[in-house]
Amino acid sequence: MRPIAILGAGLAGLSAAQALTAAGREIRLFDKGRAAGGRLATRRIEHAGQTHRFDHGAQYLRAERPGFAALLEAAGTLPWPDARRRVAAPGMSALGRHMAAGLNLSSQRHVTALHAAEGGWMVAHLDAGLVRPGRPLPEVAPERDGPFDAVLVTFPAEQAIPLLPAHMAGPLGAIEYAPCWTVLAGFDARLDLPDTLRYHGPIGWAARDSAKPGRDAGQENWVIQAGPEFSREHLESPPETVVAALLAGLPAPTPLFAVAHRWRFSLLEVALGQPCLWDGALRLGYASDGCLAGRAESAWESGQALALKVLAA
Ligand SMILES: Cc1cc2nc3c(=O)[nH]c(=O)nc-3n(C[C@H](O)[C@H](O)[C@H](O)COP(=O)(O)OP(=O)(O)OC[C@H]3O[C@@H](n4cnc5c(N)ncnc54)[C@H](O)[C@@H]3O)c2cc1C
Image (cartoon, rainbow, N blue to C red; front, side, top):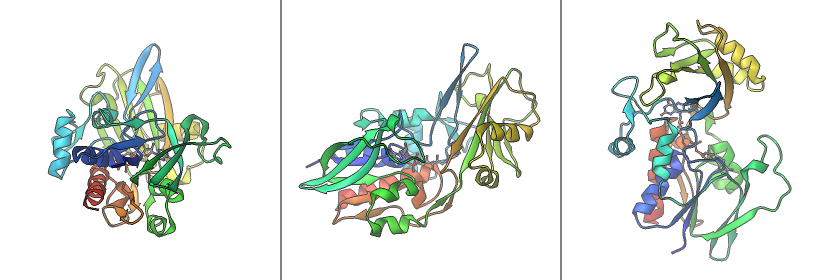
């Protein structure tokens, strides 16, 4: 049987890939990022000869499904900030690494189109380094791989819509995410604050990232997430403005360094309302956190549901 292409190596794509591989199917993952994990991400910042790591996407994981709980156990995640929530160590990206081990992943490939061909689907993709967010695609001939027996698209809805036929793209148009500006800041001394804080102003959530298990406890690293209103209002503001506004909301001295990261797709505001989409005739599917709920576990569940549809078809 021909392999299955899975586009996107976030939790949804990795979950589908693991389930299909376990069932004996050959898969190939494509992702525009440097590594697997998607929004379960860890960023390194070098400062004064030291490496500081920050979980700039998902902060912690909660498992309600036994399958997801088993995955978190197998990946060596640890409780933080309480027994109900867990984090991967030494950073959240470790979960993606764990799941991608042994899978056939082509990273730094930006998928631009799908083409129906003799014997299956062809996937067109470009070197992700050539693609600038918000700009038209460069006029470079993409590489093509295939034919694939089926294609599973697992990008956030807005990024998936251009690849899918109208009857699948239409329902995905209902999915909505709030953006999230996130500031990563390192301080030279411990702040007199608890490890996690929830606010109701420009800041939505702030956490002492260096307090998570498996991090460098000698550092004082903070992740400060803006709330959805501030993030929308300042979507196109320069990062320096965002850094200044969010730091002003935290009772803290001037940091050693601070940078801002803009997530266009963060908190899910409107879900598709079904675990996945699958067109058995076209052999084309869609999974992501946008299907059910904006949590890592929901992305995983969506990937599992789509894999089951493919295997049943
Ligand atoms: C700031 C923030 C905080 C969060 N906090 C939490 C939390 O504390 N707990 C929690 O459970 N969840 C949290 N979440 C949500 C959680 O991260 C997501 O629900 C989950 O990671 C989504 O997984 P996914 O596979 O659906 O999508 P993604 O992780 O977005 O994966 C999609 C993948 O597709 C790739 N891709 C996109 N377009 C293309 C293209 N054209 N070509 C190739 N590849 C492409 C991307 O690179 C990405 O790797 C948070 C998210 C954000 C942004």
